Image 1: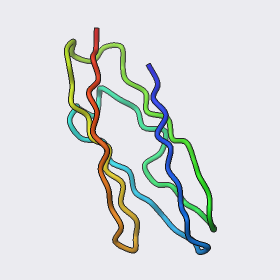
Image 2: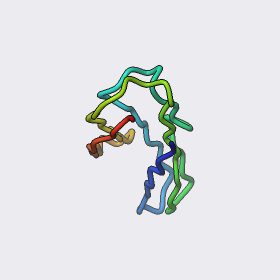
Image 3: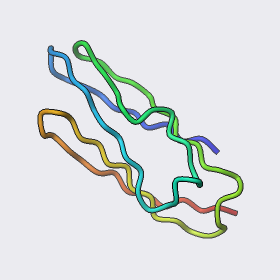
Length: 82
């Protein structure tokens, strides 16, 4: 199952964002890329794929985003693996 992480950059200058997934083992997911780079203003979609072999049940997943200039935010959601 794939999820789309939509991120944006609103400044007219280069930027780099680092993404990190917490709450589930690294073997349970694949993140399309963990560094997002912009030359200027823009948006990008990063795909997060959950493994069909991950442990069954309800999982609390957090996506952490942080830029080189110190901005950071976290998005948390629950994923149910059947």
